[in-house]
Length: 177
Image (tube, rainbow, N blue to C red; front, side, top):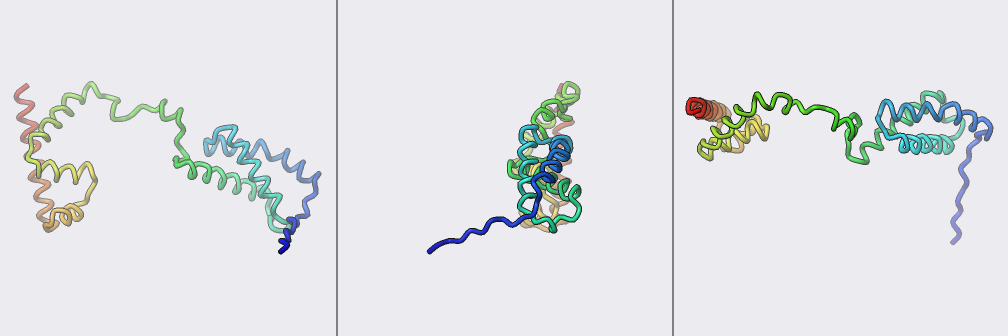
């Protein structure tokens, strides 16, 4: 059985495409690099993919070429980051340059953090679990109540009781120092 492959039917003039490519290539690469922080060498590849997609379109399919090109490079850049499992706004070198807010005044807060950790460790296991689920796991009172098999009102009382006990242990730790 013979398979017939039909050629892509486009009516793009080679000269028009070349001038359009030259006029827009740097712009598309710039959008990918500046707006989406795609590395330069990858941005060029994305721009080439946009032009390849353009060539596959028939002349009447694209009404506003500039808008189509901008939309295509934006879409390609977003897809680039999604396929790599990274957030668009985060680059590796920026992650190193940014200061972690939790370490900005670590010398000032470290003693308190250590005392709080010791206070939490001195709580009964059930209290530790309740505070861990509520504040470290981010469970809502309703979710916590479901998990513990109690009413939401009682779950709120338990959280308050655990916090008071932790505060009491924390105060005791501070008095010993």
